[in-house]
Length: 186
Image 1 (cartoon, rainbow, N blue to C red):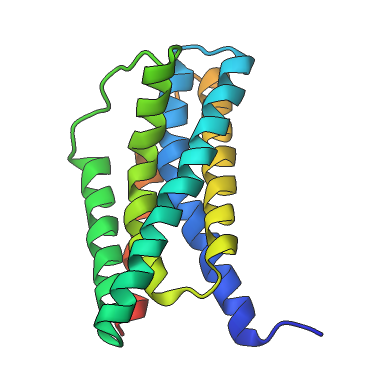
Image 2 (image 1 turned 90 degrees about the vertical axis):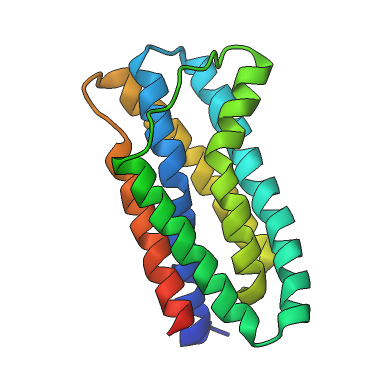
């Protein structure tokens, strides 16, 4: 038994969206890593980001399913519109937004704040995805995996190469969300 072309298409869409959402974690990770970071801290930050990238979209998806029952067919258009707004905001933030303020990530509150900052967009995407995606668990697990993996990658890159910046990663992630939002509307 194999997957149908539409199931493969949905999986590819989810993988691309999970990677797009992980771009925030990648860019923030590079920024934090530039300051110098221990390997144990890289693991700690990555795990917390992965947890937040799993839990927040899960809550968002449950809200999205609820809105979908209320809105019916309009839900797909609303979900696409939310993705477009979120993608445009990410692109705006990457090029024109204020820089990320320095947060002490070595303590629990700073670590949780950083994870929340890079995962808030996952909640918003979860709301819109809850209106159009059938497999919620696969979606949130992919979001969590990519969020944690890209945070780890960003922290490692920042630690290794002090001259890299992560702003373009956030802009790319925003562009991918914008394109998928347009896809849902059209």
